[in-house]
Each structure stands twice: as structure tokens, then as C-alpha cells.
Image (tube, rainbow, N blue to C red; front, side):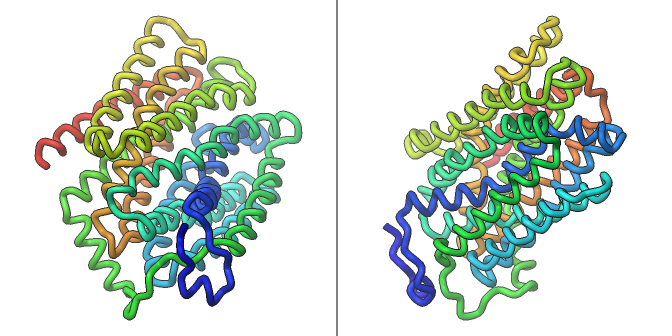
Length: 404
């Protein structure tokens, strides 16, 4: 049981157990992935309503990712300086403003703007939640706790594409934002009512110059830079797949939006099981071993998917089953990569988490926009990217382990 701090007592907020804290943090962290995944089945409908090209509609993803990255870079230092709780509450409010902008959007440009505001708000959830885990748990338990956090929060993003596809078919793509408005309001209330402040008291909170010096010091550390690069490559593979696959399903394979949500369950289940392996065997096997095995599994699975396509097997099963295996490998690797990076800066956990998250989102946004310029009536460009990037991630990891 987490003991109530002086801040909790002063604010008369009920103390929560470890499990309750993780559940609440999972709900907060899941807001961003849910907002992304529930929107993916709507991409072809948005393209049709605004009579736009695929690259134009992709800006509603890639610019939102850049905005999300900017929020990640900002929220961590703010939470180190002003506390975890106020930054989280402010982020949820900004998210709700962005949802309303998307709901009433009269043009694609307005929709893109709303998606960016929404993304900035959700950035606080992921970064500050990781910082709270760093506040509460020692280094050797962080990877397991982050994996546990991910296992709980993955439920929302898992069902989100199915819900999104159903809402688009039944009520149109704007109904997605009505749904997000209700979910966001409920999370705002729960956070305000139950979340305690976990950041320790600081006699002299770090200012912008102190944060900048700390960031430069972190980026000069080979270990931190290596973990950050590794996480960015792994995440880019996942992001490119989930952003391009809806177009491939509808345009290339002639499938309805609801079917993408169904097949996406294989990917989500794979990632969930990879996280489960971390929570079950992480301490015994070690973080570097799990990273190595996870990236190797992801690499082999992308090569299998590419080979099956070249053999003429183009049914969604032959795409999503290998991608589910890839997600399993990523679920083993990514929590350890993130935890290893953040644990290198115990006094600036929010800042370290921001740098890691910012790098992942920027690299992912560039890759999403780039691959979106290729034809989407075939999965080949998407699969080639996933295979090449996974091989690169494996080479980076092996080189990094040797030098370490």
C-alpha cells in the first residue's frame, strides 16, 4: 500500500494501493493510444469526405505525432518542476479542447489542428505516468512495472479500432470524437479525485537552464543515446504498420473498416503477451537478454511477412499473423528499452522520459509521412520498411551490446 504523503493528507485525497495506482495510470496513459487507434479506421472516410489525397490525410497523423512529441518534450520537465498531478490535469483538459475542435471541424485543416491540440494534451499522460512509476519503484522493478502498466493500458487501444470501425460505419467518423469526449471527461474526474502527488519535495526546483544542462548531459551518455535510438526504431516500425494498414485493407484488399479492427486484435494480443513475458521473467532473464530476443523475433517476423507476400499470399491473415509475432517481440523489448533509459536519470525522470518519448514520436512521424507517399493499394512498401527497419534495429542493438 502506498502511504499517503503530506500533499495527499493536505488535499484529503484517499490513498491508493499499488494496483489501483497502476490501473489509474494505465487509463491516463491509454488516452493517447486510444485516440490514435480509434481514429485509424476513419482515415478512408475522412479522405472521402474532404476529397483529399492519402498524403494530405496522413498529415492528421504525422503532424499530430509531431505535436505529441513536442508535448512529450515539454511535459516531463514541467512535471519535474511543478509536480506530476497539475501537469496531468492540465494535459487532460487540453485533450478535451482538441477533441471538440475535431468534432466541429469543417475542413481537413481544422481537423488536423484539432488532432494536434488533442495530441499535445495526451502527451502528459504517457510521460508523467512513467515518471510516477520512477517516483514509486526502484530501478530493478521499473521495467516490470512499466510492462504491467502497459498490459493494463493495452486493453483500450486493443478494442479501439473495432469500436472505431463500428462507429464509423454506423454513425460516421465524427462520432469517434463524441466517444472520446465522454471518455476524457470521465478520466479527468478520476484523476482529479484520486491521483496523489508523487514527486518528492524539492527545495530548489530545476529551472529551464538546469533542465537544458541535464538534457545535454543525458544525451552525451552513450548508454542513454543507445537506448533512445533503439526505442525510436522499434516504435517507428509499429507506427508505420498501424497507420498504413487501414488504407491497405480498404484500398488494396477491398475490406470494410470494421475488419481492420478485428485483425488488429492479433497485433495487440502479441504486444500484450510480450509485456507479460517481461513481468513474468524480466528479473530472471535480464533486460538486455529480453531486448535482444525481442528485437530478433521482430526481425524474423517481418521477413516472414515480406516473404509470404512475395509468394502471392495477400490475405490479411498472412499480414497480421506475422505482425502479431512482431508485436510480441516489441512487447518484450520496448519496456526494457524505456525503463533502462529513464533509470539512468533518477533525479530527472520526467526529463529523461520526455527525451525518449520525443525521439520516438519524431522518428515515427517522419517515417509515417514518408511511407504514406508510396502506393497503398499494396502492402509491399509497408512490409519492406518494417523489414529493413527491424534489421537496422537488430544491428544497432548488437553493436550497442558489444560496445557496452
